[in-house]
Image (cartoon, rainbow, N blue to C red; front, top):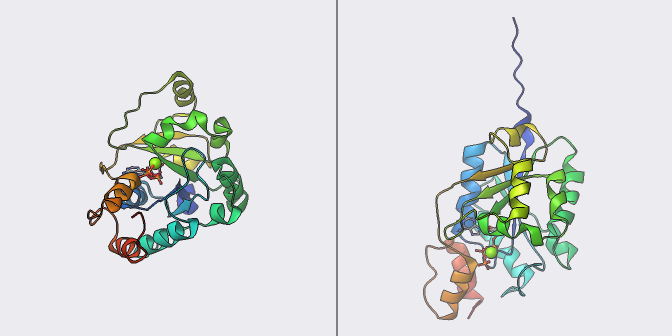
Length: 220
Ligand code: ATP
Ligand code: MG
């Protein structure tokens, strides 16, 4: 008897969008834990050009992109994707997902990673109910943010929540998963605030990024 086992997840792609103003160890640790624990082959960090839900970033898109490049140079599974910056204008995730889906084809699992804070704001996103057409949504814990789901989101969770994270590797899109990772209470706002007070930002982000911030006197 021959038993055929198919692993459809070989080409799965995870993506993490953000302002990365600046990128920090909370983003990076989240990315590597997801890659190590869930068997996705690669993860793209996608810095936005213009965030839709918050004010203008503290530094230029090019500088935020440079810092992500410096941050990921040690792990070949991580890459940076500049499409939102090249597209300019407000960075809507739905446009990015449609774009990536067209590139990777209909069958490849695509996983959009969101911290709990971002997930809770989902009902304010453009065409948010359409996002699962193009990708799975993988929500990670974030210190200070509890899954206090308002009604619109609870219906969404009921509809799309997967029973096992394995479902996110089998289907190309359409499932929702919540995961608790190592809690790191680091945020870009915290780093900007420390830098503005001339306090140390060491150990919150990779050294090359810290050096870049100091060299260019960012967030002063
Ligand atoms: P800011 O304080 O300026 O909002 P941030 O630290 O939240 O910055 P973003 O670029 O806004 O960073 O976040 C990009 C994505 O990474 C979001 O989905 C966010 O929820 C997630 N994220 C950021 N920091 C963490 C963290 N420490 N742990 C888990 N997820 C995080
Ligand atoms: Mg944020």
